Length: 130
Image (cartoon, rainbow, N blue to C red):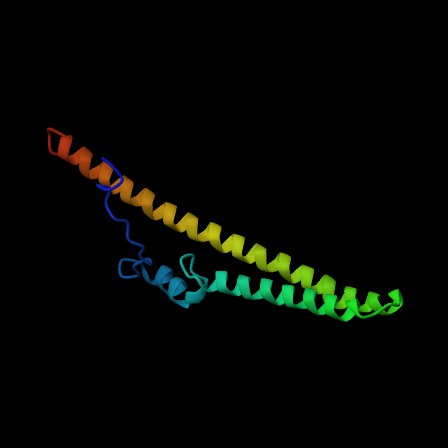
């Protein structure tokens, strides 16, 4: 089988119809933006990273015109270090979001493979599964 003959994998959110009441309530209460396949955390991480870069540029702009080092330090500490922290937090958010998405997709692909193997096993079983 070549890559062109491979079946198309579709991304689906979990179906709540077959769950019991306790599990269904817990899943419905979750925020949809925090589901593993949601792109919202990635966008939030990118926005936090951009805000961090803006703070770094602000610190650079304020300190570039100052000749006195004592007047540069407050800008570097307040905007520069805060910006660096926001960049690190934003990149971490994007990284975790990507890992959660990859994990969810890998789990779906594993389930598809397991279903295909069960169907193949049932088709090759001469007794019909008895």
